[in-house]
Structure formats: C-alpha cells, structure tokens
Image 1: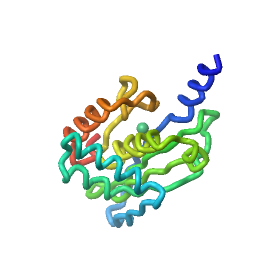
Image 2: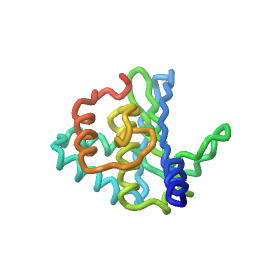
Image 3: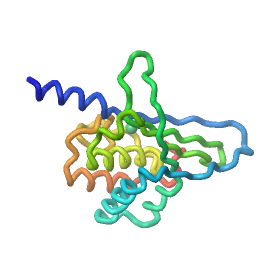
Length: 169
Ligand SMILES: [Zn+2]
C-alpha cells in the first residue's frame, strides 16, 4: 500500500511539458546560450549515451544551442507541478530561443538517473523538436517512468530521424 502511494507521487512529480511560440517580428536576435553549471554533468551523460547509440556529432551538437536554467514553476489551473519544460521561439527566418526550465523545488530530490532522463527529455523537445511519445515508459513520454537502457536506443533513433528544422513540427 505504501509502495503504491509512493509510486503515484513519483508519477506526479515527473510530469514534463513543452511549448512553442512564434514571434512575427523579423529583426529578433538569437539569444545567448547559457547552461547552469548544475546541469553540465547531466548534459554530458546524455551526449555519452547518444554517442553509444551512434547519433552523429552533428546531431549531438544541437544540444549546444539550448539554454538550461532553474526556475520556479508554478502550478497552472490546479494541475500538478511539472518537473521541467522547454520553450522554443522562432520567426519565419530563425529559431532565436531554445530554453529549458527545470523546477528548482523538485530537482534536488531526484536521483542522478532521473536527472539525466529529464534533461534528455527536455533536450528532445528543445534541441531536436521531438514531440511526446504516446507509448509508455519512453524518454519522450509525458510521464517519465521505468526508463531502461534499450529506451535510449529508441530515443537515439528518434533523434537520428529528426528534422534539422525544429520549426517544422
Ligand atoms: Zn515533454
């Protein structure tokens, strides 16, 4: 019984989300990329996994266009708090902002494994324009649970097949 309750709470805290907005003005400049030092280790973990599953350096380098920062994510409309989200902003010509926000109130309670998976999931949206996977237990599932090693292979395949124009999704 206790185990069941814990599991439910875990499911709730690991909900992730993403969003996209289009800016109509064409003279927008590309934002400077900043990665909070807390996340660098986990970003390296993700890169290492992707190399293991034969993702090209060209695809892996898309990670370097993404800002990753802490934020205080507020509950919306009584919904559960998300652990992280990605926002991509673009004009007709350029993608000028790729930004991941990680909820600071939850981050430190996660295991190293989950932290790597959360960063991988958000990079999935923000670096390669991947959408949520509607099958369960995938890195791109909306709720991150039970990620086993073969799931990294599936994630790598999704990245390899992704369009370089992340506005196209
Ligand atoms: Zn997501």
